[in-house]
Image 1 (cartoon, one colour):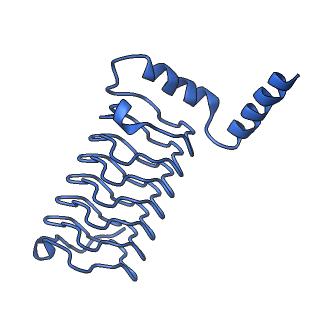
Image 2: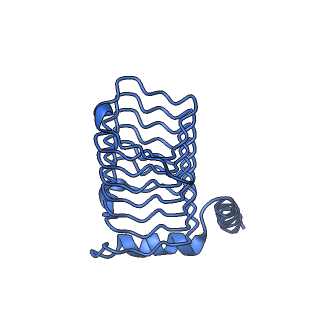
Length: 188
């Protein structure tokens, strides 16, 4: 009876977080050596605990997924697709996000401190109150992005495109490459 109760508790608590079928994909992934072009589109992995050093998530597809509250710090997510994903309160600190696609993603309150977002697409993304301190934003596309109350202090923004971006109360102290930021009139 005690084992049944513990199992029931595990199932009940898991129902408040990630989808069990999506977690099964991750368990299967841990047992294989191939990890490129993983399809987690539309997955519900909120609050799932990733072990970044154990998985190579390069080019993974997380489009339309719910990854809110997930910690992907120090993960290699180069070329990953996060378009239209819910990434609220997600941690990407010191992650490699080079060439990642965050188009239309919700990154409100996300942690991206010291992450590499070079050549990433953040067009139409919501980065309200996101922390991008010391992030590498070289050649990033922030067209029509919402960066209200975000922290961009000490980030590198050489050749970043901010056309149509909303920057209300955004912290911009000591931004590197400020003279090479690209801003053109655009309809968002």
